Image (tube, rainbow, N blue to C red; front, side, top):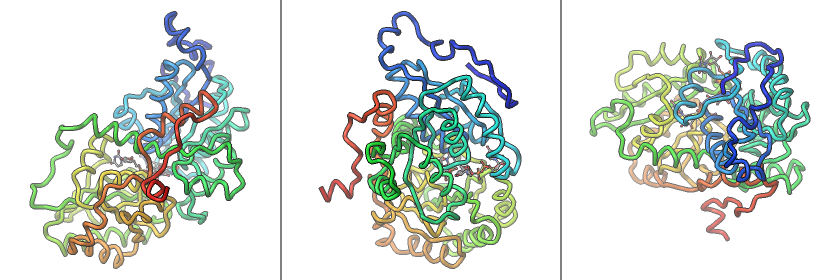
Length: 416
Ligand code: UD1
Ligand code: UDP
């Protein structure tokens, strides 16, 4: 069922929305599991990380009571991702505007979410991560009186300006949440230190690993979705889009990429450029005519996972890619000074290099010229998840308790 929802006026969703998929035979099977659950998402990473949760909930409920609401904070990038994971929102709020300011976006989201909550009247609202959609949906859900389930809770840099505004979005959501799905023990400890009730925290692993494994199996044996240069080149995958880096830091990073390909004639960079105009402008201007730096449109999730599986090195400021690359044994240089995902750094497979030109060039050059340094980082580690996070989350949402054992990363298993 697709709902257009262009205005903040009541939606008049029919009551059947909650049992549209219930047939006679299914009723007996699913009745015990029924719970009205609204799942809200707005950007590419939220869809990637919530898709396995949706599927886990559907497996238990047949989809009864599960409503998907897209805020449309992203447009093309969201639609491409929804296609990749075969999901279709029941409700579409279509909020994105060109070069949107987070304050304006927050206002539009709150206005449009209120009638959705009034009409769907969920018992639980599930959100994922730290975007403006997440903070707005958690607040609107709280004001409505629904319980808030926060997937990927407890990640912190302890710096409210980095990542900006995501650190605050995530903290605000943590204050509003009733179920905190902490991906790792470290995230759980951060929540405990803030006084969150221990029995509301569940260490689930990160659902990004569930998605990655699912997609990897789905595309196994298929060629990469894009044409790659021949085997004599080492591929470097680049992505960057953080707001706190806009302006001069972003330009420095672009110049660093130029320096690296000049220094290494066997390096070929592939850079799917984020659609934010603040990213597009400097990237196209500085790197538009650079040999061996291929600027491409954002890739579909399947194509992206296929590419990630084949590259030599990753340079990124992305949260999700920082988690995916170590699961595939790919070294990552993180284009940030701080990360809320330090588990990969602790395991020695991720390094923080910031956005300063000389530092990026020096760190990348070290990995491109020193085989021992490269080998030390090119290890597959299991620090973010074990592929069972979504099942654990579904248990809590539907049963109120987690019957599966909590996630333990490589390090904790070694220490146990
Ligand atoms: C948002 C999230 C960030 C997340 C990122 C994922 C916030 C505050 N930030 O940042 O945490 O890492 O999404 O990519 O919520 N645009 C398009 N088409 C698209 C998507 C974006 O044209 O499909 C352009 C639009 O001009 C839009 C701009 O990008 O206004 C910024 O989008 P927005 O969602 O506000 O911020 P992101 O930088 O994408
Ligand atoms: N991704 C994608 N296509 C791309 C780049 C990234 O599908 O061209 C996926 C990637 O696999 C990861 C997610 O998008 O799961 C990361 O999204 P992004 O970097 O936009 O946001 P962040 O994770 O930083 O919030």
